[in-house]
Length: 163
Image 1: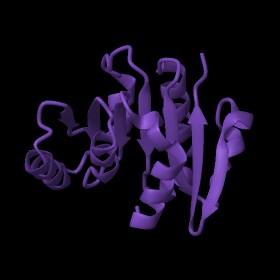
Image 2 (image 1 turned 30 degrees about the vertical axis):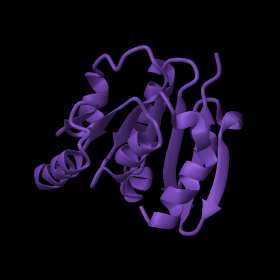
Image 3 (image 1 turned 60 degrees about the horizontal axis):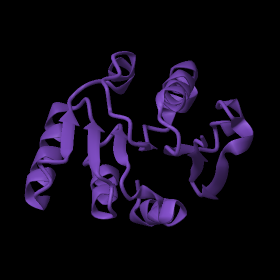
């Protein structure tokens, strides 16, 4: 994710990140989850399947001194979702920024992943989903509730789960 897009997402989420549990799917370097912590998220789970990249997240977590509030999970996100561990009752802020091809090649899995997390999440949870123009946000649960904005080549959908 480009820096300007990450900044745009956090501008859209604003202070609502504070106190939430950040869940960074397809974490890469962990930039989204770590940024959420820097903006007041209470804790974070960062899921990255690539072992060397997960090692980078571990080093970033150690460098930032957030070992006590950041959990790194080295797993495939789709498998992790099926075994969804207890993430607590505090609201989540979920970041979903996979390779864009997943939306074209694994559409059903992506819909189940996002929809399953929306259904499992506590009230007041937030979702930030990054895709490209090939993904139709109208396919998501509560489709009319997603705020969708274009930041070419990216398209971002923001969802707030109300009580």
